[in-house]
Length: 200
Image (cartoon, rainbow, N blue to C red):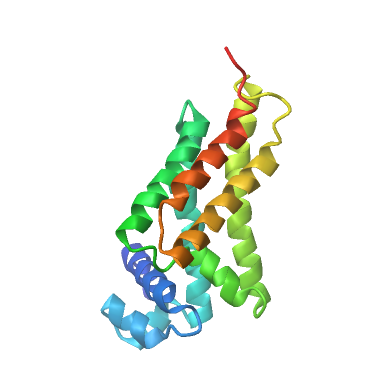
């Protein structure tokens, strides 16, 4: 009889795997270290995820859900979406100020490390960024439909620009060890939307 999978254990594995892979990179992370971080044996870890690649891909799926909750839903819920976008960058500035601008973006790191080496990883990373941009785009389209933004706003292009600015800001902050870049780039991201706001 198959053992029941404990969702709480799986979530802990995903969190610890993200932490280890984030700090070391996919190729330098090992299952032994991830298992130790989870407080379990390597065999027990493999019971849940059969290989390092399977685990890393599961972490990417986990990050998609997390980003929808942390980066997309607040924009959708905010009555002033351009302020919510600016806050997204302000939150990143606070976070990266706290960790010395180290480690960068988990998914961005995987994209740089694995996209040219493994097509499965490339497609999963592309899916991550597509999900993020799709969610933001849908929010902006709803704002257009209720007359908040001009019909001329390219919701998809603007969403992709915001994602690109966010990821680029992470790279600049990490390389310079300077989190203040988020504030400057966040203002530009806000301006992308402000120019299409219909004045009341």
